[in-house]
Image (cartoon, rainbow over all chains, first blue to last red; front, side):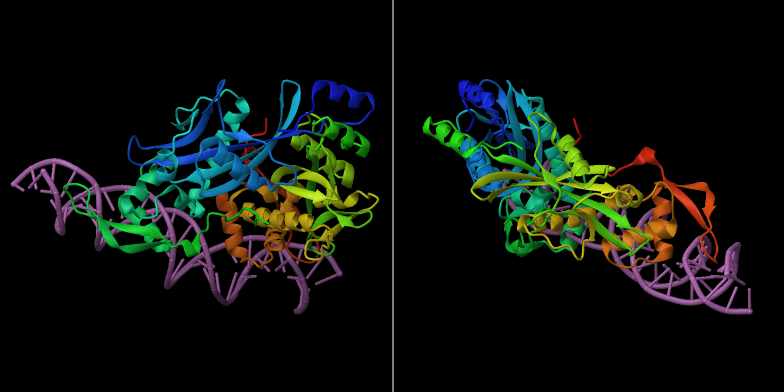
Length: 231
Length: 231
DNA sequence: TCAAAAGTGTTAAAGCTACACCCATGG
DNA sequence: CCATGGGTGTAGCTTTAACACTTTTGA
């Protein structure tokens, strides 16, 4: 974290120079999907003095998405599978000027909820209470973006385990979009899109017909569609 | 512009404080559409030592889109009609660390090309040569975004004069998308979308049937669709 | 044999693409 | 009267939405 001590600030002001360049704050909306326990879309919330999004600062010359990845990991103890920049805004906290660069991170359930990290809760997006209104704004926009991208990308990919049943995939979409979908139409669209391939195996889970297992054809991951190429 | 003079930097380093926070660079891809002279999508390019995008720095606590608007205006002499943030990245130039926040600005032809500003050229996007590879990357992504948004928003709105013929509107889309569109299908879609309203008037322009003039129903400007609410 | 989830087809409506001719005007 | 751009309709196809029953299994 880089900011000048108050007296230095005054010294520099007196000389007409500026230490008033912004501090960077990278904050991450880290999503994971609970398909088992109480099905819900959850985000990582850090509880220190109050509830906030995982956040931190970038090092000098560190690429911003490397920094966001590093912060997501160190703040939550979880390695994301997908990261995408969201939006940048200016914010003032206690006389300090921040430029807040927000990102979305995604991880599958097993990756996210198995790890136990002090101060980190994975909370249902419908119940999240964040102290900072900017954090709230970031979360709202992250949800808009995630829902929109579900329609024209393969972003759901990164919230599911490596193999899954058609019902699990549908439940994932339903949880994120927060509305029910028709089973037959859903399956048809998914199959037609060609992003799935059937594995040879089935999953037996209870006293009913076993479910075929699918995986994503990782060759055509289109999650990135409409974000710039990373350098 | 805020960066510390070298000797101050050393002083602060010596004391373990950091002046190494990034400098902000806001850069703007300012689009305008030439429908008359040589029809083309153009952007504002600033020529000082070499060709670059209009750019500048934010003031302390200035909201980033206010800053981008201010920079777009002061660098080009043109007031944009629409502004949207694009992407943020980290860059190093001559040992200085920049956080580059890019935006798209749009203005109609009359607004843009009537003004004459020293060092500013409005150049066809197909011919743009920019010294900085980051500027190039920003332009490429701006084009991707503009084209994509043409499909699901009313962003074209801001590149056209307040009233226009159906042919002009179609030409605008064709120029931006860089491919021909079917006249009848185009008209049908536009009318069906409900974003246009016919004015009572026609335009007589040459030895052929006069063209009906339309305007956008500003009540349903959906350009912003999928960008966060501005505070 | 029952309960529970998996899996499967059809129909109607809307939207998309491709395509060619007549209309109104000014010179 | 002719050259110029403005304006119009249809047919085939694809995509979407709505809708209910049969299959396979374990207990």
